[in-house]
Amino acid sequence: MSEPAAIFTAEALAGGGTGPLYLRLKSLIRGAIDKGALTAQDALPSEREIASQLDISRVTVRKALTELVDEGVLTQKRGSGTYVTGQGQRVEQRLSRLTSFTEDMLARGLMPSVKWLQKTVASPSPDEAMVLALSPNERVIRLRRLRMADGRPMALELAVVPARMLASPDAVGSSLYEALQTAGIRPVRAMQRLSAESLSAEDAEALSVPAGSPALYIERISYLADGRAVEFTKSHYRGDAYDFVVELTTSGETE
Ligand code: GLP
Image (cartoon, rainbow, N blue to C red; front, side, top):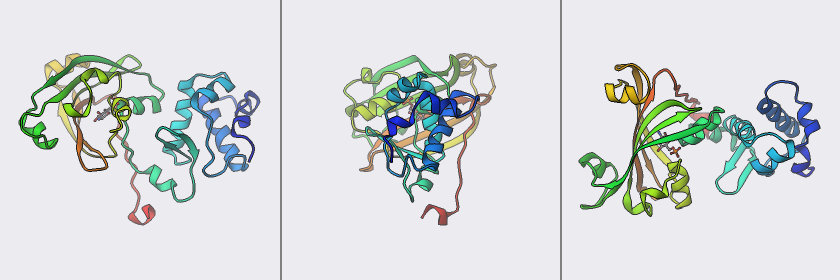
């Protein structure tokens, strides 16, 4: 193979046509794979390197890479980078992935932001204590946020994490999953329940929609590899702003 960095040139990007930059970058990468310049398991340069070599923004690079990951062409390994997907990995990448709000929005080319409503250590409610399997007197970190994409309110979210798992509520910056990853406890599995709800007057106001507007209510309980629950999160997504897409496969294809 050629050196992966040599593939990312301005000339090659120009060869990808005249459409949006991220689509041109996707076709550059696909083309390199088709031509054999990149083969299974090859590591791509970092987002930052690709962006600076092509003189485009990191957001554009991330959008292209995330879409190729979603399409199963590339695989992202936490902490070690992006690789060309090998045979046999492809289907797994297409199954529902356990992603964060921040990652979901960046994948759509939107810039996530947060307005903090609550960031405290508190006693759990009985259902939180049960779901998170807390010992008596254990405390939780309670994170309530308005989540926005390109400045537009998208979701109200209350995430509850056992207090022993993070040094303090301030360990969480704009992304909970980033903080969990830094602490070495990013969840690997989750149960998610979705239902339709009408927004209360208070929640509707925070989300800038009329009271009673439809919302997608999502409850997620996430677990570590050892089976411990790490988060219990309740989110209300604006019904007019969020689509939840799931790819379905027959069981045979997942083997
Ligand atoms: C989604 C999930 C939540 C999760 C959050 C983490 O919104 N529904 O359960 O806590 O992502 O997102 P971030 O890492 O951006 O804070």
